[in-house]
Length: 233
Image (cartoon, rainbow, N blue to C red; front, side):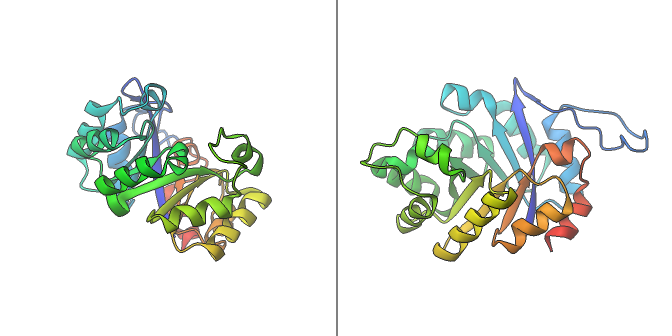
């Protein structure tokens, strides 16, 4: 299972200050996304996940200059979430240097728009889903009744979505939901956050995830990348 570091970006800066040498007092803290990305790429990260908080608010990628700077500094695939809800948003992200995108849950309820997005991104488009049943049920669906997570994942896979990013898929209920989707769906499953120790990472791995995205756990120092990677093997 891959371990993918995440950087949350707002106003051109990381929302969390990262100090890689905090335990030893070596080095200096930084909130520059490009420097944080460089650190994790040097540690062996196969992908860097970026969350554009401003983009999520405005409905299209906003921190394009910063994303471009990251792409110029690291020769590693970048995955962007936040504001990815249309073909044009995907094109903006790709033009900035992103190679993968995570589309909004709303795309699952708009087949024509999803088809257009897939035409632009193909297998590099993932769809983000909340694994919590109550949140999935509360989403403003345009259908007679809310789908279950397995139903929705199966539907998306049938439409050509090759990758799903599941949030809140840790803990007992979350891991059980992840395992159910893994059994039912032929798609790459990525878990976004939630694990804060090696045991949590191993549970996600054993439930069938292909990758786990870790942001705060890595940037806060609760987990170091080497430990997380060893637990994911």
